[in-house]
Length: 233
Image 1 (cartoon, rainbow, N blue to C red):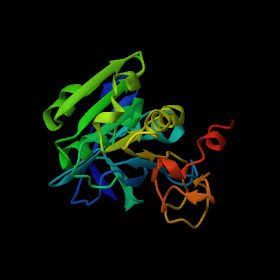
Image 2: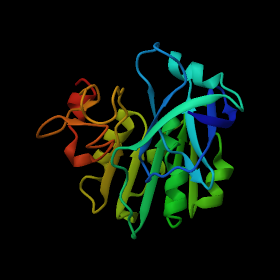
Image 3: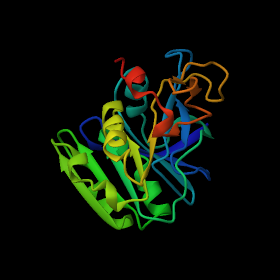
Image 4: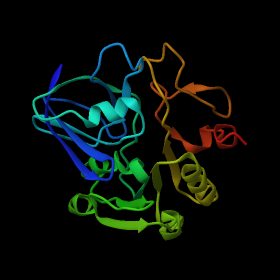
């Protein structure tokens, strides 16, 4: 078990959880968090928001019972962390756009620290948060509240585009960029049980065969993913 340093609400039902310890992880990887006994059955996979000496941070939104329980934790409480898991975003030396929609902005703070030349696009439905923090680490930050952050994106300007957020937004990014030079990488959010590929709970419908978000992803080239099937079309 690890000790919580802080659990700060930064917007309505959006929190930054800071946990003490020396942790590792690549951009786009995740940890599995658990702060309860037998129920809820599944632990919660949450992407790495930031890693610094002596601590790791997770940016999360309260959606269900698990994240509601995590939001009640305070400094000094204990939480179980397992990870890092999964394949994250590649390290790209060229021109990179990082696009986050809603809580999908979470992995791009740590990512921008690793690739400070990247442009970061933050899309929010109603309330922006942590924009000033992103502006400290990214070359350029574009914020859109209540609209479509993709409308601000010039796909011709980039060699690679990283996307995390709603499936519809990731699909739309791929459609917008598929005839251009940019490689599009998407982070597929799925419920998970084991985190090591054994349970098949986190199956992602791909063009050739289904893959597992926990070990084959969560980051995939957009060309691999069957978005119509994933979106239930």
